[in-house]
Image (tube, rainbow, N blue to C red; front, side, top):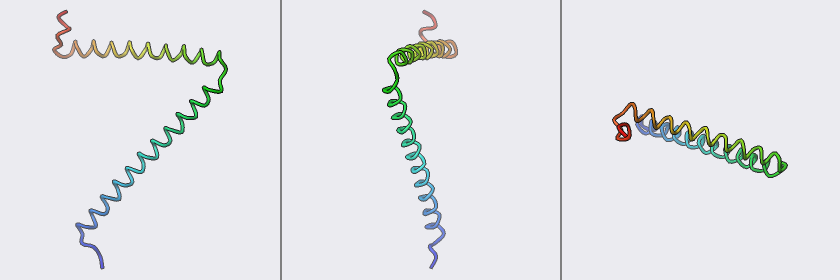
Length: 86
């Protein structure tokens, strides 16, 4: 005996939602594995390599700060911003 068409559609929708949730879970787990691998690689690195990585991380943080400031400035010039008149 076949289920009614509405119930069948509900089952297909639930299966799609389950697949999507499973995909997100797999992606999250893969990201955790990559993070752990990177952490272990840094732990095995020499002291000079760690210093270079820290310096590079600082440079990246500076660039991100500059980009954030630039975006905030652009937002203030596009919209009405109280800081624009200062």
